[in-house]
Length: 417
Ligand SMILES: Cc1ncc(COP(=O)(O)O)c(C=O)c1O
Image (cartoon, helix red, strand yellow):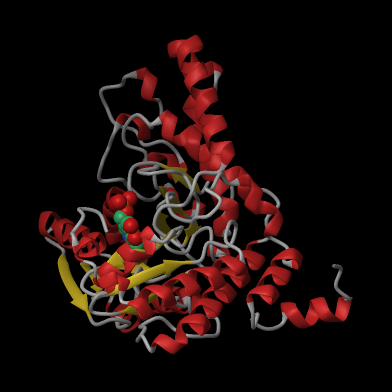
């Protein structure tokens, strides 16, 4: 059945009121063509792209090519297959998604390690030597800050949630997420950067829950330093390498505290003295993981030609639909419930949240759980459809109404939640 232009416009302008409307909206929304790039089991509804994105078919293909280059080219592939350039080449692909310029993004290490490197490099940019982290940030951000403070003799100050903005007036370095890992609340990046400029402070942004789902513009917002992971909305695979961003006009003034040979200006000169590479490349440390990088490079193909404004818009609407479809359960949420203040996921609270998530997984809907009672549902817009949200909420209602989640097998703790 074809829809009239006015029916399509009406449907696109409001949340679907039925499964049939959700299916109709899926037919006309602009990102539906991207879904076929993913290899997903047909009846599974994956609400966990905010934690580990599903594999795009191109990721497997690129991994296969890298394996072949390894088998056939052996060590020659560092040059012949361009392995040596992968960290910056893939960085340039990510740069477009961040609103950064070519040459400003390097793929390397993990977010934890990159936070350490960037926060250490940022200390000389700040008027006072103290590192601030808000309560409620992802734990690694606070652990890294406290450890770095301990070994450098800088101060470490944990501030209240949302108090990072005020802390910027006192100088120092603030480590802050653009999208909070629990609540999905979005920080006003430009406002924070303006406060940092006025206060003589610096910010290291954690983009982990923002990249690949928000239409970021780091350049316009005045960001100097940032890092994020690639295994969530960028679909790079389990343990895929992280990336870091350093604004090009300051990169040559900064030093990495981990002076590895891959950050040297001429690693294969084997000089005794350390000379940092120009630009962001100085933040590399050791040999890059080529198989993971190749997989990530393939995964990024799904973003080719994709408008990030549309991605952000759809993520929010999918989240709005989930909140509307689950409103009858009366679950509290710390996530902003509307407008443009929420990233791509929603956390709802229930004291039996762990068991509910396990029962949902058994019913073919995958979300995740964050202790003590947070059920997190992610709305990655490249592979999720409005009808998936409708169906997932239906399966959830059955589990709650029947009490099926009370089955003791759903309370058995797993190591990864
Ligand atoms: C916001 C945030 N920061 C940092 C990390 C940790 O990243 P990594 O394991 O790459 O160090 C995560 C992991 O999920 C995260 O969600």
